Image (cartoon, rainbow, N blue to C red; front, side, top):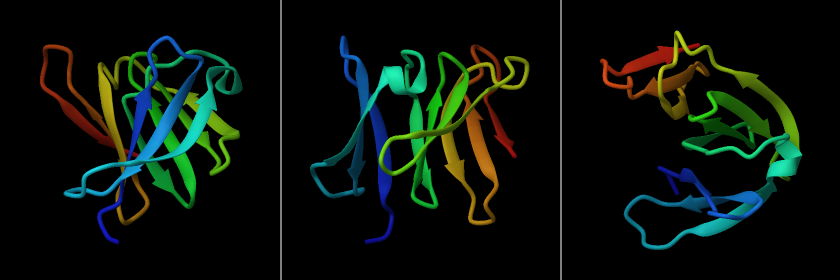
Length: 116
């Protein structure tokens, strides 16, 4: 199926986030992974998630952090986004060229799309 989207949803009051896969226009979703916060070292507030080569790339907007997890949920890498470049990061994706795209709402200013 084309157009596969993956969505990260925080579970309120729990010690983990759950990743779900859904297909646009088709009702329902499938849980694919639970990720304990202790695995990534902190409780985060995920804004978005995308996939790349089978790994999950999670954007935690409130914390301005990006996490790369393996398909089994192991932490591979993490990084911090600079506030001067990312006022309110809310979206993450990869272009077909492989470039990373992060979208910011702007916190009362113009939104911004940054590519890496």
